[in-house]
Image (cartoon, rainbow, N blue to C red):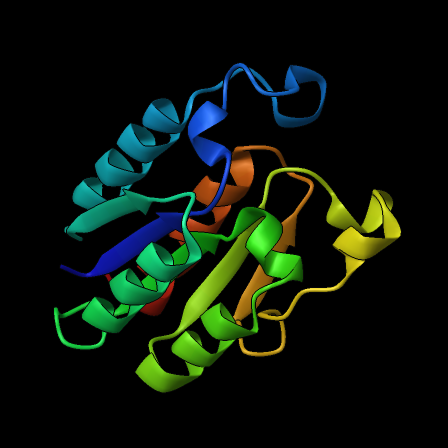
Length: 145
């Protein structure tokens, strides 16, 4: 596998959760689009979503040895709370982009800090689900696909 896309807590409710903030596109639609976008460039894309911090950490650990070359992650609320996910990224040393559907910098103060951003290759926020496609465009270019 070339690219791993991870979505954190509550992202399984995309399409119905606060559509005024997150839009009406479902997570299944986002994932299918990324898999197709990667396939068009010759990249294998795997997707993973969990509402559980430990499951995300376990999946990151697997990425260290399963051939993952790049990770796109929307960590959801774990962005602002999880030193453990940050430590997992540091341990696996797989490059990654952080994606947020909403502009977290224009929302509540607590959403403006990311425990992951300084380790990330880049951060996309506020572009809606298009941010995922933008991240995949970057990954395709970076991996030379």
